[in-house]
Image 1 (cartoon, helix red, strand yellow):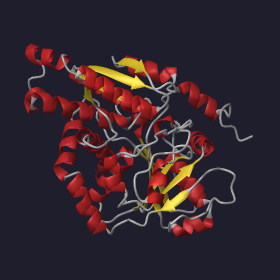
Image 2 (cartoon, rainbow, N blue to C red; image 1 turned 135 degrees about the vertical axis):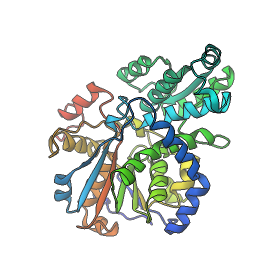
Image 3 (spheres, rainbow, N blue to C red; image 1 turned 90 degrees about the vertical axis):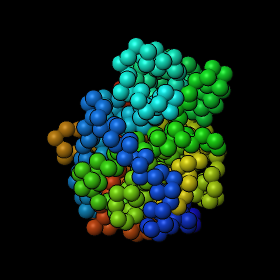
Image 4 (spheres, rainbow, N blue to C red; image 1 turned 180 degrees about the vertical axis):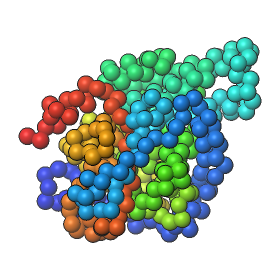
Length: 401
């Protein structure tokens, strides 16, 4: 199961192939059981009516495809999403909507403008832990629908990302050394104050809201597959807790008539998915979680995401921060599109994983990547911290030297 393709390298990169992957018809049944079709339908019908909604671009990275010897590389540019510069806008805000719907009733939208309803909504507080983007989506949703919002961030979240959260009206509280610790703090404070947790991380007894988050993320794939006619053979997905990857995988299986090969990609210091695939059960990360890919610095897998991904992915791999930085520079300086693509640190993990595997012939062959391959990548965020981005692009951080 473990293929030592990186054994002669000095980094901690790893890849494990998944022995539990099931045939397409079994994957279809799995998805319909965990995330039934009506959940996605409701998400799309709701989100597509929000002010400013439009499908984000799919950019053909033809120069990258030529360099890697594949037919095409498609980059879904979520930097364009609702002005929030992240795919997270689809999940957190939609989950806030569903939370209010569960608390007040399905007619809360139609009567949203009544003074009585506004007062009722204003008395509700939603909360979440975040490295930046998910919290921003929750805060944006809370502001859009009129409820209060408290967001917990850990000590490593940058000041720029903290300020971005405050712009959407959230009360921001620092606590914990990393994302996993801030999740626990958010849960504790929610219980103490009768707040409502809006998390993309699922755990025992908490799966309803994360399912709504995943249904929101499914919209990206619906746009790409149904609206933009993308038919990928391979998909490289950054993982983190796994909600993005699980939502994307579910939507691919829902809307295609085959299963693409799906490869999960994470930072080498946040390798909970590699370890989980290796041991064939959810395993906490034993790494430091120190990575510039802040949105992927997660030490535990989402229980719900595991149920989906453990049966559907081809492999799980890790990359270095320098691998991600190289992919950021590639998009900024090497694109043939009419504009340079500015991608955040977590956005390029999938592209970095593709580049890395394509440059190792035995691994490329194992994954059946060839001249007919069509690769799909989610560019999950734009520039969410300009200072960090500029330092990486100019080699001040993560230098090639």
